[in-house]
Length: 306
Image (cartoon, rainbow, N blue to C red; front, side, top):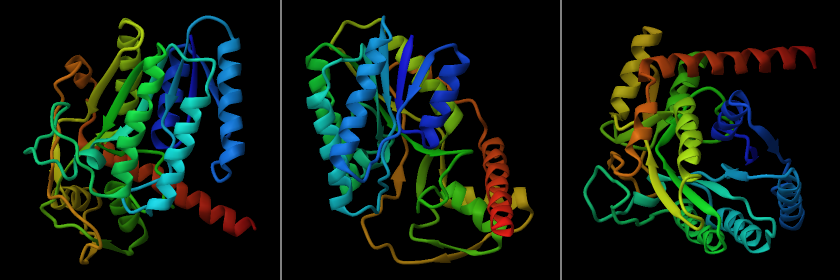
C-alpha cells in the first residue's frame, strides 16, 4: 500500500511513523506553502508519483498552519489551495483522510456538549469556517469515487509540537514550567477541552483508513477523534504542578475573540476506534515535557555553536 502524507507537523509526522512501522510505502512532499501556484504544482506532482507506483494508494492530509487566532486572509489562502488541489487532481487516491478540527467546527454549535457527529456545526472563528469549507470541498473527491474519512480532532498534544505556533495549552504549560516564564491565559480556568495524545490520534487515523477501505467507493465518513475524557484548564495546570512540584506562573488576560467554556466530545461513529485513545494524561504530559526539554537543549547548543 502506498500512502502520500501531506503535512508533517504534529499529527502528520506521527501518522507517517506509524504507517512506516506497519510496512506501508510512505511518500511525503515538500510544499512551498507561501506560493499558491508552486504549492499546487508540488501537490499534483506528488499525487501523480504516488499513483504511478501501482496498485491502491491513499492520501493523508494533515497540513495546515492555521490556528484559532489566525487571520481570515491567511486561512482563506489555505482553503483556496485545497480547493484548487481537489479540482486539479487527476490521479485520484482510493482513500483520503482529511484532518479537521472538532473545536473549530463545534465552537458555536447550538447543541449541548458533549458534541458528536450528529451535533450541529457552527464555527465562530475564521479557522473553524476554513475547516468546514475544506470538509465541503473534499466531497468533490468522493463524488468522483474516492472514499473519504473526515477526522474532527480534539486538542492534540504530545512530542513534536511546533513551539513557534501560538497554540497547544499542554505544550505551552510545559514550556512555561521549563523556562520559568509566565504563561498568559486568555480562557477561564474552568474551560473544558478534550485532550488527545498525538500517538493515539495517529493510531486512530491509520485504523480508520483500514476501515474506510472496506466501504463502497464514494463513501464519506465523518468521525470525531477524541479521548472522550475532558479536562479543565485548571486540571491541566494542576497536573503540571504535580509533575514539576511547583505551580506554573500564570497571568489571566481578557480574550480577544469568542471563547467556548465547554467543548466536551464523544463519538457515535466507528466507536471501535475509540479504544485506541489509551495514553493517560499524566503520561502524555511527561512525554511532552521531555520532548520540549530536548528541543530547548538543542536550541541552546545551536546558539552556542553559531
